[in-house]
Length: 297
Length: 264
Image (cartoon, rainbow over all chains, first blue to last red; front, side, top):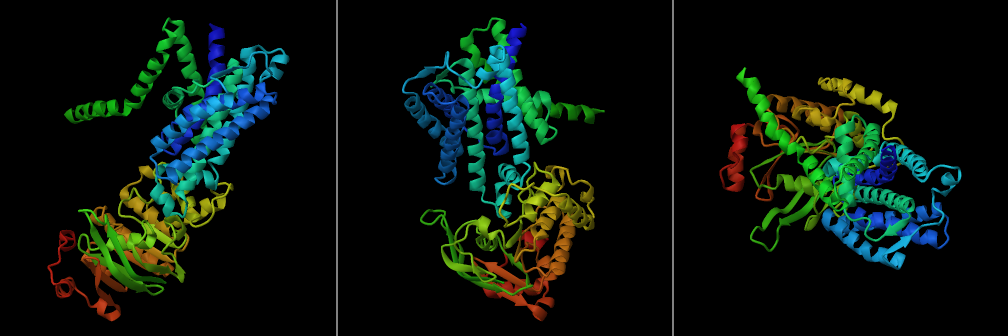
C-alpha cells in the first residue's frame, strides 16, 4: 500500500509541473489551452530522442523546455496576431504537434530502458527508482514554484495576471495584452514540456499518445487543489496545485486498486472534472433554499 | 492639447447594420479645458471618446494629442497619455486583484513592465495618503480584492488610478451612469475636485443635462455624428436646461430624444 502511495506521489510531483502550466493559462489568463496535450508528448519526445542520441539528460530536458516554449509561442501568435479563437488555436497547435512529435522520434515511441536519465545520479546514490523520482520531482517543483511566485509578483507578472482578469483595463494602463497572453502561453507550455520530459524519463519511454487527455488531468488537479487546499494567497495557490496533482494521482491509484479497469480511467477523470466544474451551478440551486429558510423565520 | 480633425467613423459598413457614428467631427481642446459632452442615444459621444482612446481605428481624419499624431497608434500606446474611466464600474479595475495591485498597475501606465517587483513599500505609503481623502476607508484595505468593493468605491478608485500618473487628457465615459443618484453625485464632485486640483484637460460624457451645465468650462452637444453645439466661457455659465433644449431644437431641427437626460 505504501508503495502505491509513494508511486502516486512521485507521479503526482511530475504532473504537478504540468498542472502549474495548465493553471497559468486556465486560471491566470482565462484561456483553455489545449496545446498542452501536444506539448506534453513533445517534451517527452524531444528528451527521449536527445537522450538516446547520447545527450546529457539535463540538457535534453532543457531542449524539451525550448520546444515547449516554441509550441506556446505558436499558439500565442495564432490567437493574438491571427485572431483565431484561443481554444481553436490550441487545438491547431496540438494537432500539428502530433505530426511533429512523430518526426522528432521517427516512430510512435522510444524506449529509455537502460539509458541514463535525470534520475540516474540519485539511483546511483542508492535511492530506489520511486524515491529518486520523488527527490528530483520535489527539487524541480520547488524551484518552479519559487520562480513563479517571484515572476507573478513582478511588474510584468502583475500585468499578465491583470490581462486574464480585465484586458480592457489593462490596455487602458498602456499594456499590450497580446504580448502578455503570448508570454503566459509560452511559460505554460514550457513547464508542460519539462513535465513531459521528466515523466518520460521516469516511466522509461516516450509515446506520441502520452499527451491525450492530459488537459483534463491538469484541470482535475487544479480543481482538486483549489477545493481541498484553499487559495488564500498566490504562494498557497501554487502549493495547492502541487498537492492537487498528488491527490489526483493517489485517488487514481486507489480506485485502480479497488478494481476499476484501467481503461475506464479517462472516463472517470472526465466525470470528476465535469462534476467539479459544475459545482457553482449546483451551489446556485442550493443557495435560494437557504435564503428562503432565513426569510421564513 | 487635443485636436480631432475631420474624423469619420462608420460601423458595419456595407451591411444592413451600417451606422455612420461620426461625420467629419472636428474639435480642439485647449490645455485645462473641462468639456462636458452631451447628446441623445446614438449621437456619437462614446464613439468619439473611444476613437480618441484608440479602441478602434477611425476611417478618416486625424487625432492629435499634445502634438503627437496618435491616429495610427494602438490603444495601449495611447494609454501613456490618457486617463480613462468607463461607464461600467467593472471595466476600470481588475476585480480579482487587490486595491494596491490595481493602483500599482495604474502608477506604471505607459511604462515598460519590467522584472522589478510589482509594488514597493514607498508606493504603499503613497497610495494610503491618496486613498484617505476619498473618505471611503479604502486606505486601510489595500489588500482587499477590488471585486468586493461597491460600484461607487470602484469608480472612485478608477478615477484615482486614471489620474495617479497625470494624463494629458482625461476621458470620462458616463462614469456615473451606473451608480445610484447619491453616489453618482459624490463621484462627480470627486471628479471635479481631481480635475481642478490637477488642472486636467478633460472630456466627460454625461447624460445629465444639469451636470453638463454645472460642471466644466465648456459644453459640447452631439447629434447624429455631428457636433451641433459648442458653448464656452460666460455663455456656458448662463445656460439653463430649458435654454439648452431650445438651442438643441434649433440646431438639429428635432426634439431632444433622450429620456434619461430629460428625466434626470
